[in-house]
Image (cartoon, rainbow, N blue to C red; front, side, top):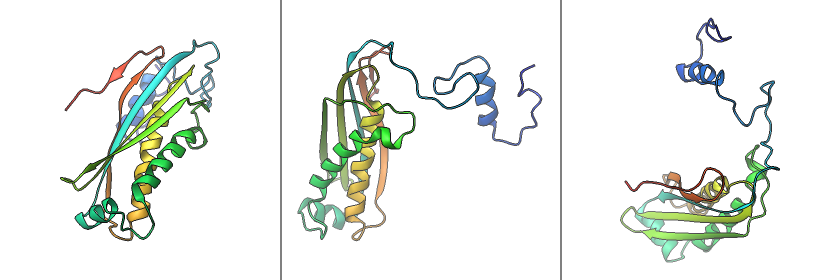
Length: 183
């Protein structure tokens, strides 16, 4: 019997199932004594890696119109969100404990106006040649960019919703390529 088979279940079922699976699966961010660690990538081959992430923010028509027409009191919201997204991408390892500091070679941020929501879709592309991927960096960039839109517009609309933050695609590395299926 494993050490969790006789455990009185006081945690949710997912917690128990996670630990049952651990008996046969080695998690990469835990050492042999179950202490957190950063994965050692020193023996991995360098490869060109690209990750694209996206997310949306929906808001009132008034907030949307003021942002598009650059009438907000805090200045150019979308331009500031792009800069924030780039900065967030670069600072990922400062905020996510097990992320490696990376030498990014490119970060690009696009904002798409979505008048039908109303709102915006923000997309970040992160690139590098290295030993580990840039998915977390792209996701962090999207998150920070969208939070910046919220911050700069909350005086107009506190009911904005940040939603659907996701990895769209990644390429390079040992795990190969991934592209999210269209829904």
